[in-house]
Length: 298
Ligand SMILES: Nc1ncnc2c1ncn2[C@@H]1O[C@H](COP(=O)(O)OP(=O)(O)O)[C@@H](O)[C@H]1O
Ligand SMILES: [Mg+2]
Image (cartoon, rainbow, N blue to C red; front, top):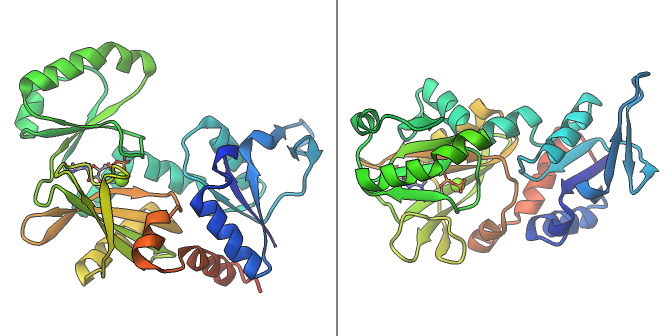
């Protein structure tokens, strides 16, 4: 059984990849890191599709763990592999859905899971309409971005108008969409990240923003601590994972009134540096246990 971790070359020595490779070596698993820059795909009319690594024809792996990334390059490689019956953890469909904050929140909401009220912003909206739907401050964020930047807390009508006018032209040109979202402020300086593998909670951490701001995931400015999930948190996380159909994922919860929650996002990225630091658990090992158990490798 051959397993690949698929990512950009520059992430070769990142914590997640390093830890999974380390754990795989301990177990004598056949696992290697493949950089997408080294891959060439060829499709020919006789249906014999071929994959080359560093110009050498390569036997396809059995399982691939891709890094979360919405680039066309990685999507096309994963699609190619999926068509060749390679198992992808997480599947392309699940990854694409998780990566689209609007569609994934919509799916959760349709299944009655609590999410922040969210408006899709395709171009310049009617501000009166927005104000009827949401109170200030309003969160403005990118639909497909994961990584703390570009989440803006808009404080009033003037600021909203300014930002939208500035963005209007580029939004249409770039064919990009943004989201406007209700601000969940109950514990605005923290959020709860729950890590699940195969619909089971493995670990969870509480992130606290050090500077009393809302961006709980601004790395370096927040602290993390181990968190024991309660029953409500566990049920929400499992339901969310189930609906998005992810094998390995993060569910981010925001704290709401009355000891309740809103699901901020579901994240298909299997990386876990802070979690291993906060909990001292062997998360890389858990991921490999999953692969061994699910795909009967021994
Ligand atoms: N609607 C919201 N209300 C309150 N805080 C929010 C809201 N949306 C995002 N945040 C804060 O910003 C952080 C990042 O938002 P998120 O949507 O998870 O983006 P990213 O993809 O960058 O992780 C969250 O962890 C949370 O602390
Ligand atoms: Mg997040």
